[in-house]
Length: 159
Image (cartoon, helix red, strand yellow):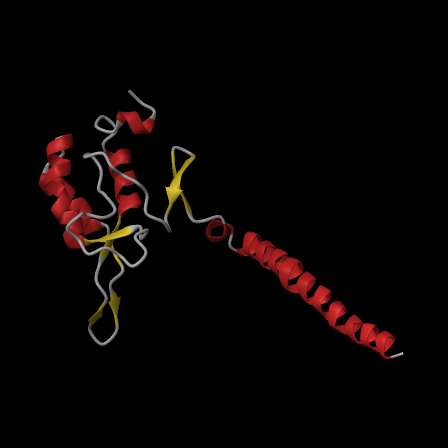
């Protein structure tokens, strides 16, 4: 009789485990995914950046730009981020890359500096200045491709 009572005592525990697994492992994730897709599709799909209608990267993760004609996500001399996948660089890091890009593309350094200045983001103002301005590397590189199609013709689909 004791053996039957022990088996019977496990039924509520097993039932609660199965119900918890279904709720937490299936229904809740599906509900959150559905809400995200319905109300925040851009964010739920990874904030994809487009060029000529095609997805070219995510605004959330650093892209690998290795050619000298582009801004690079991390300069070897800059302090690395904690994760190493931040899509942004400091304004000073962007300025340090201007001569290289200018030499490789023929775009005047003053023009590239202006592009950097016009695309600064992220200054948070409360009781003075908190935080540092930064540059979104993917967005600035896409801007270069759009504004200088003759230099970046391999990336625009035009010749």
